[in-house]
Length: 104
Image 1 (cartoon, rainbow, N blue to C red):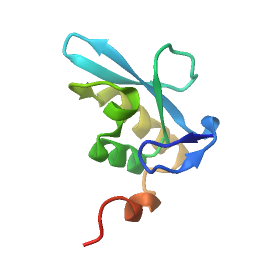
Image 2 (cartoon, rainbow, N blue to C red):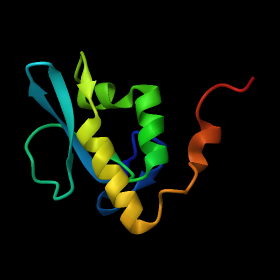
Image 3 (tube, rainbow, N blue to C red):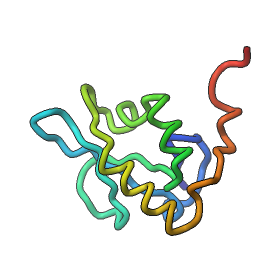
């Protein structure tokens, strides 16, 4: 069992996408690791655009991967869009959005 960094729900590792940070000259880039074989510390995320948006908004990738500085999420965003389009999740709204944030 792993916890999604976006919606904070627990799921099996096979249901989540592993994400790693690869360092570059401009900072770090978030790289999807669907085979779960790349070296380094990983964060887990549902392959859903809503969970990705929540994780970015909460700045969860930096904390989960223990990385400071700029995180380029372009490759990860493109991968999630492609996966969501093929599985039909592109229009699914995030169920966990009501759990995030403070009540007003």
